[in-house]
Length: 167
Ligand SMILES: Nc1ncnc2c1ncn2[C@@H]1O[C@H](COP(=O)(O)OP(=O)(O)OP(=O)(O)O)[C@@H](O)[C@H]1O
Ligand SMILES: [Mg+2]
Image (cartoon, rainbow, N blue to C red):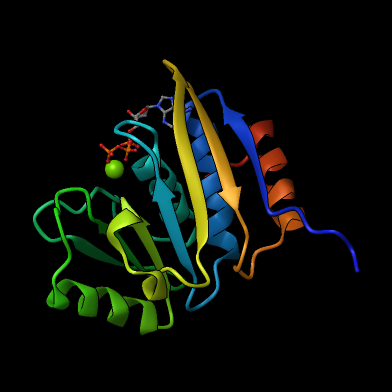
């Protein structure tokens, strides 16, 4: 069996790199996919989701869900964008809402997912973002337990860094 890399990453030196990587993720997304985005304020989580939305062909501007927790967009696949930042704990109603998003044939992307119970994170692609400098961000992708392969993700990272994706 080929050895598999469990995580890999790159340094994004401007917001476009992050958005372009998201764009490629959105293009490759399949029904039922789940992506978890971890990292501090301003790390680029929503920027990445904007790229994912563009890759799914979503026309509407993607913004962080504030009053709603969950925003839904229509593209090639539906995208549910969840942001759990403002929550101190999850109640049953929220868990069920997230579970129902994940049950749909679309893509669910969740910012600040640490509160989620393990069963709502299973099969997810996890991306950890960090702020390195003004415009520099580290993005590390964890493929363990997900359907994504490190080869596929490495190609996407290299293409995003080329900066030639036209949107
Ligand atoms: N390389 C980069 N990648 C991503 N964003 C960058 C980069 N360089 C600068 N930025 C800027 O950093 C900001 C990232 O904000 P964004 O809302 O995406 O972060 P966030 O992780 O969603 O934060 P929050 O936790 O507050 O929701 C944006 O203003 C973006 O333009
Ligand atoms: Mg955000």
